[in-house]
Image (cartoon, rainbow, N blue to C red; front, side, top):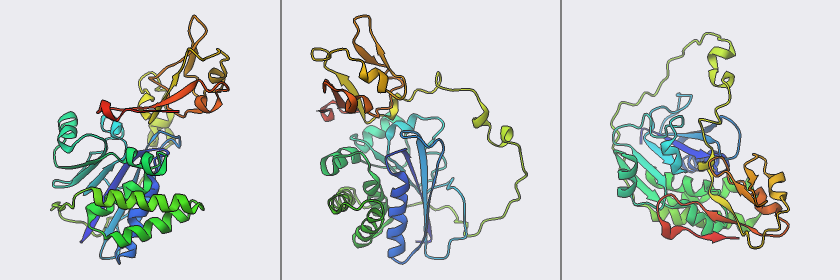
Length: 307
């Protein structure tokens, strides 16, 4: 190993930052030098975020975001169609792409027209089965550790160290370790074949000061809600049982995004193009007539209704 650069793409709340920390910690525990850090945009649940890990056998002098990764971990496959996130941009020739999806690598390659090595695994389903939640940080860190060739012992120690700094519940910690090790063994070992020259030292650039309107144009643009729908952020969608609904409209009042409307008969319904799937409406429904249904993007047989 000379230097490996891994880039994680996920959505706020999935644990991309912690996944990069798990990988970096595992590498450090195995004797390598490591960096791990996130890049936040809008700090909202469901918003696209990226996190990065560098691993090397010498001190790492390179800083900043990773624009040419050896490995890309896609924690939410809807990001593959996000023209701003661009999770595959800059991937080196011979690099590895991991996608969290129930699809096979061949199905994912055909749907997204992806070249290069692809590995797939339904991390969300595994996480729901073992942890009963959708925070897949330990699982994503585990598959990255397997891809870059780290050991099971280092991964286990890293998950224990990182997750214990976040949660105090020993049961959740043990389930994170169980889920991480399951994923570590579920994917095949791969050979990274990236051959580009590695730049161990970075040049220092002096950046001119620019006013915010020029240096951060996105912050000064008008709203993009009409152009950018947020309905693909969901893992679960709310569904109503209209036979039991009493039209109290508590769900309408509690929706933080204003996505729940009322039809001519007085029943609530949701704008699925913009609903982010926070499920506050499900929690607040006093009659418990609201349930949740997992979003599926590929296989109908993985669809299930919970709640």
